[in-house]
Length: 57
Image (cartoon, rainbow, N blue to C red; front, side, top):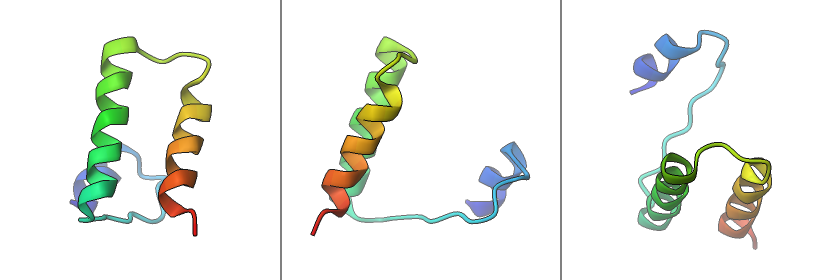
């Protein structure tokens, strides 16, 4: 998996892979929304909210 990602952008230094079902579900929803709605002004904010919620203590 790491080699596939690095082949797309050699400047990537680290790749973290999660098999956590909730992380996968959230990323899938985000990706599906991105595909459906395209890139928009709130994209980075939406991603930040999603990751903050996932990693909140």
